[in-house]
Image 1 (cartoon, rainbow, N blue to C red):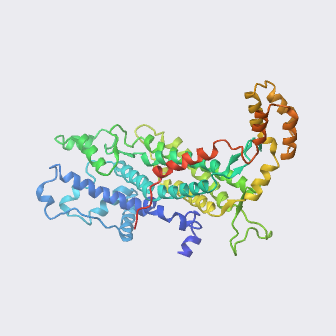
Image 2 (image 1 turned 30 degrees about the horizontal axis):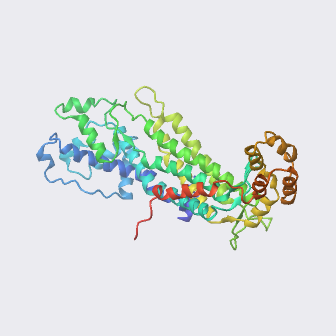
Image 3 (image 1 turned 90 degrees about the vertical axis):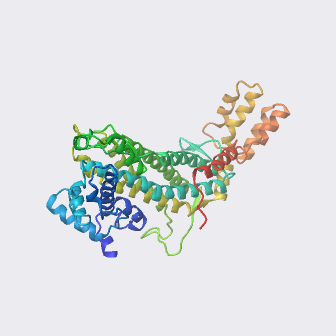
Length: 458
């Protein structure tokens, strides 16, 4: 295994193979061959129920679970060396394992894309359910736990990179929790389409050979039996609009996480967050003091790679010359790569979250060095008291200036306002001026259990 990973062309199968291995069962060449062989046998079984296959041809043949090994995949590849057509190679291989009386009905009336698109729709759905959503759930849980822990931790917010009104660290993370929770709902709700409609989408061969069969109903039933939605209006290929919508939902999730990774990088850089020091790890080959935010940086890079591919899928797969050309086929074989970079990024963000914590001392020092950030509240209190020049008064005193607590209180005393207004102004402080941040955070976290399934008891 070490030699295989050392010589792998892609880092997904080399350096990062441990993290991306779960996707091999859905997007590897072996998985693609296995899925199509099983679909061919499933189609043959469904065909046998139409009365089209003579009863004597079915005698002695009992469809059942189909084990598929590396040797089976190897045999198909040997056939493909001759046919230079992977689906025809599967058909020839299947002739070796079923009675000769049924050979005429393997791949009966189908086009290769009938089998290919169903196999890939299944791989997209099953990889989502078994690998991607669980990884996203772990990520969401890590963010939710962090937001809950820091729900009331006041923090200096920044707009345009400049000190702005305070917020809480938990609420800023809760914003991402809410955004990602919506993405999670959309990803989980997506229903994948597939087609079984023949060479140009009209069931020509099936209708010509067996007009007594309701092929529209047959197609709907067969695809529904796979847990997919049938699209009966196609060319030779399935219009990929449905798959593209799924890719775009993943792309949006990744874009949100780029935003998150960059914010976390900045919080670490600014000192708002501190990273755990792990013994024996090295942050620089020459600077011994370094502890780098490598998990968030790695995630950002992989999210960019994944999204570049998802953008290409939307551009490429929405276009096909006439009833079909083959340029989509090689692109579709790369789905595992896009999801590999996605999975790697999600896992790295989860890992990064386990290594950061709030630097409370630094955060509070930053707040108390910038009392000017309560000027929004101060001028609004003055406005409510009837001071029409409130904004201008605060602007002349505070714009471009930095103020500490003592200076702020001296300024309030000099205003000469009535005691009630003075008390409200005196009660302002950067640590207390957080609005409804805690309540907003709690409202987000209260709903997360509805989005992320709880682990089932073992």
